[in-house]
Length: 149
Image (cartoon, rainbow, N blue to C red; front, side, top):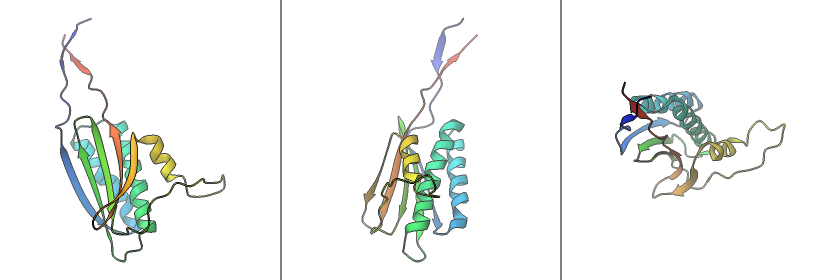
């Protein structure tokens, strides 16, 4: 079997994309689609894109559901760093921070933050000057060596 001769290039480091959408439930699928498209454009694996899109959907859904600022815009930023992907979802309601809670078997909601914790390296929420920002990091997969032969 031939030895690997070179590493496949990683997607270009420090790429970023940001988009904004009005706070409305009908925009949640659009956020998920835009995240998937950006990650596909960067050449990231489908498995990672699926996890990132799910976490983005949870964060955006939380903003839509809990942000009490009328006519708010939700901002989604993806930043590809050298060894991880950073997802940030911001909204202008600094009074309502995400808080994990235990969901009962019959509850229809309350599991989103547990899902986020299971799919990410780290996650959290920061207060910024005009917004709160829910964020999560995802490790980038190891780059498989290219084989010649």
